Image (cartoon, rainbow, N blue to C red; front, side, top):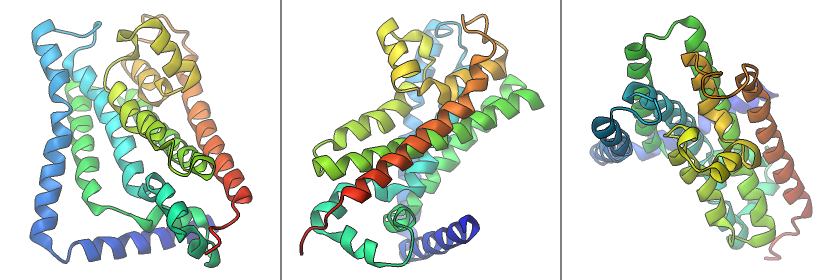
Length: 267
């Protein structure tokens, strides 16, 4: 069942890519612009490292590692599950009624509804930065495994967040859209820096309330062998896959609960 759903998602995504590439010059320019805009997010990190040497003991290469990990995770989810970001529109306009009539998973249909192939450039740019950072830091197999774990965990976490954000729309009809953006766009921006640089209350929010620190900060500490020196027990990074999977399960459950209470637009 899962393999069939993934195969169908790939077919629908490829269909979206083919349609968006009908105007190839425009498609290429948009990808270049988007990659440039995304890369500019790394500029403040470089400026801070350039003028201060390091940020709370993190070199520019280590900061680039954090940036690449969270950038790859969020860009992948934003591309693959774009429809969940626009879910309130489907509710208000009655599109969800048509989705429910089709003999396929609602999650699958919503995920591919607004697939944006231009986000491929963001994924590629984040992966490039991540790869360069890993080479510069000379990470070994064990450290690379932690990096991969962080990237996959980030995908699970952000997928759970966008689904939970979509679920909220069943009760608010788009009035809480900004909350989802704060946790996704704002969260990915915050995780471009080590959690340790923030105020105590904000560190606690990112660690315990909305556990985004488990996306890249703790796996990066383990990859760099700095967990204990950062003041955390050695077992904390090992919690990352469980915490990230837990966020996804919560998002799926919240969305399923919202679907159960949905009563149609009446149109």
